[in-house]
Amino acid sequence: MSSRNLAATVAVAATLTIAATATATATAAPAAGSSSPWDHTAAGTVFLPNPVQELGNESLTDAKDADYAALAPAYHRFTLDHLDGSGTLTGQYVRVKSSTGAAAQLVGGAFPAWHRDVDQFEQVMGYFWVTTAQEYLQHLGFGGALRPVNQRQIELRVDQYGGDNSFFRDDKANITVGKGGVDDAEDAEVVVHEYGHSVQDGQVPGFGTTLESGAIGEAFGDYLAVVVTSWRAGTPTRTPEACVADWDSTSYTTDVPHCLRRLDRTKTYPADVVGEVHADGEIWSRALWDIRGALGDTKASTLIVEAQFDFAPDTTFRAAALDTVAAAQRLYGSSAAKAVTAAFHARGIL
Ligand SMILES: [Ca+2]
Ligand SMILES: [Ca+2]
Ligand SMILES: [Ca+2]
Ligand SMILES: [Zn+2]
Image 1 (spheres, rainbow, N blue to C red):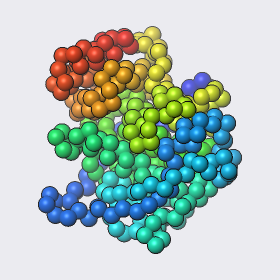
Image 2: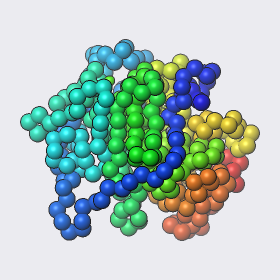
Image 3: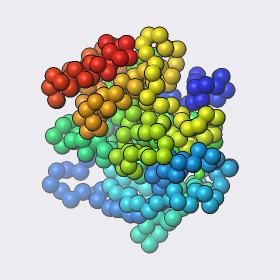
Image 4: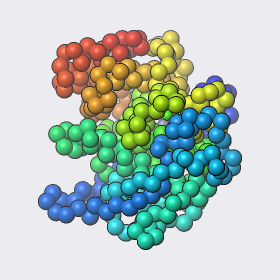
């Protein structure tokens, strides 16, 4: 049980929670040398990554899912790729299902310029940002010089479920994004956070069975949310880059800037452990943030993801930190390994 608003008392059902069970099925990639069935593209309208972050306007509110003038500059036409050519949001890395509205369909070769007051907008957001997250991993070399990471077709459901709640169910390679407060899929950082759980499950089936491994899962989702959105939309200039889910969190936070969580808090281990995966994840995510600060985005994310292949499903902070140092050493040598060690040392983990 956990509230997204870490300052709040227990009010909301578990949010951004994970439930680890069985392995998901993989979808076969097209055979090498054959023309890909996933090479279709179409324009769609998205937030990049959310209106609060882009516009720097912390007073934007959900307003019951209304589309209003202050949001207008946050809509962007962008190309959706890796589509299958069916005219729906079905692609190589994600297929979108909705239980709250009709499935998005191409009209004249493009997805209409839906805004946030219609369900299809969230479907397009879910498709775009899951695919973008996989493209980020590929740009790091995963699936090229490095082994593939989570190159399977997951299902993303837009659902009324549970109010303000999104979660990843690895028994079905399934992400569900809820519609409480600001609809979760209207904030790319919520979508990518959930995809982070899928990534870890793809690397280590059933990952995150204990408090510390679960906290690592939450932390990695937050880290991935920030690095993927900065990669695609540019480093934010009007909100702190370390702030996760600036828009979704307007529904349940009062502090400005609105953040679900941050990567740059000063929590240390074990003093700040509270026994809740999201809160304790801020210990781990700060270490990831510092690694990125020391080594840059590409090296940091590459070694962080590469290390995760070695994590046990019930890993501890310490064991996972040692795996991460070892990955840094293998990929980039001693000075990188030292920087990673320093980041975990600063958190009290090593
Ligand atoms: Ca909406
Ligand atoms: Ca929400
Ligand atoms: Ca953000
Ligand atoms: Zn989560």
